[in-house]
Length: 386
Image (cartoon, rainbow, N blue to C red; front, side):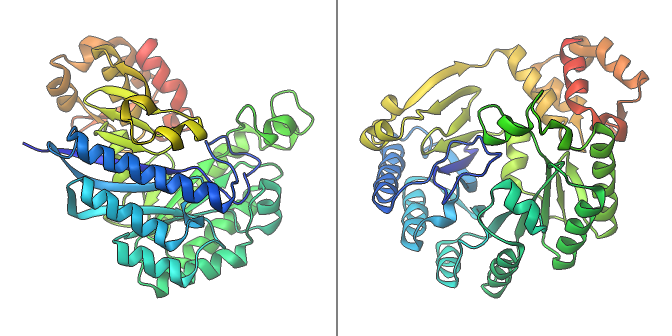
């Protein structure tokens, strides 16, 4: 019986790196980008020759992320998708997503995406306020986003996501509400609303990190919770249901690829630094760009840090990833997967979190309450480690 497999394709290039971003990405010239695409195609071809995944798996989702995949030439994207189809068994109704920055897409690119079989676009907007966009280090304006969004609609893309970031410096509940209302009017199929995390090693950390002079410009915990509540309220009124802590979708328009991560489905990462989980084995590709481009066809050379997950680690992932979903985790599915009752493993901690009204059990699922969502990381830690 063939198993489901998701594919993630990493494109580690941006026009300019955003001030808050700690992803594996950088700006590069055309020559380097061309060479990287050639190496990526070699890695994909190597998987075809290995028969490790294509003989026993069928691909249900493909996600081109980054970085900014939309800075590639249309022919690059078509070459990548063609190579994937030649090397893996891809489902006819596979969800195929490309991340795009406003201002980097053209009609030619969008038509090439459509022709290649891409059926979902995720726009990294972050805010509709141009001052906020400038402060974040984004390369585009809200007006440029509107042009890109309109182009995508004209080219027939019905499944469009818009990424937004809240809790950014100097942001108010009112400015966030204005951003939400503007996006709701556009009626995208999906909205991802993330809260800013100040990551070490980023320019933002130097200004807004703990103890830094700009830290006071970040919204307080109370303001963040008000933003969370306003987000859910406005989006639910507009017909979006919250299916994961940070993700909202119209009916049947959830991101299948991301659901696969939270449900611990097998996924294979291709490209620089891309991570994988296959049959409870975690590993990732090297992060040295030059080495990757020289050795991409040698899978053993570019894959590193293999870790076979213990049953304990698998159970912990089942809980803290699965409970990100609003549906929660199935008591029955836990027992079927591990041949143990979840209450035998974490019963005391689960009952304590129930008493504190941070989680609840309904119809065989354990899930976060609205109060628990606000402090979800604390809840996960308490369930698993007490």
